[in-house]
Image (cartoon, rainbow, N blue to C red; front, side, top):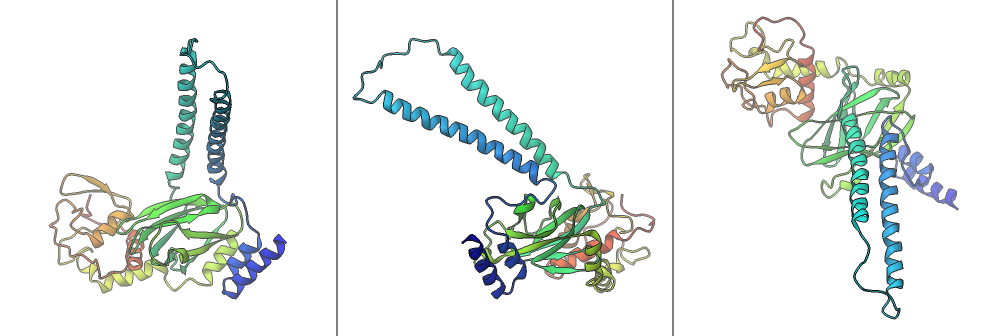
Length: 341
């Protein structure tokens, strides 16, 4: 009966034109998502521990409630006078034991949180993700662009750099146990390492408007060599950095930010990852958010020694074009005299 029902779900999904959803439905209804990433098992252990503790407490309270309801029912003769025993040990026990349990949960959850928030090294595959009503757009470094689908290699750290074009979304892959809010005008990050091949559901877990329920996709985990072949078959000429180079020229950025330019402005060679001193005395790392803000909010972090004359490109460049400009600036590695420090 269940097999027939699963086949019906798969057939319906096929009629809707989504083979991946049909394949996922054909696996059957699961009580719990698969453990398909390197952190999934640790997250589940903590979850099961919380469920166990809550179950023990809930059952204990229910049994005590039943016992006292029967023992002290108004029709029964029972001693309802003042307590004649010393309750100090009981009071200490119900204070110390819950405290110990809560501290275990706190330390365990804190360790797991910091592990999940510790972004992988520069060897990780970095993929940009843009949420918008109502779809996901993903941009690979080589220039390959996907909509509502995400292809990644198995066994490799993948760092997602996420932003939104409109409202708050939430990037959620249940089988990987990763979830990250995606905010407009800001970059947020999440990482994962897939440990199983196959297709896994991707959702928006934050209500984002009328068609929120349709904002979903699939993550395809592939063997590394298969992933490289997939990229090679779709990679546009020049990739994302080349697109950024063309935009850099079209927008007139080279008239200010290269050596010998007529306007005195910070040079961009070797900028990415460096410490930049600002005119308010702060020092900031030139990472993705800093470069994005410099393009869209140029008056926010003005480099020391330079006048705040750069115009904003908000409303001129789209979010995917901003990503391309950032990728191009990352490639500017030649030595430059007088670069901002």
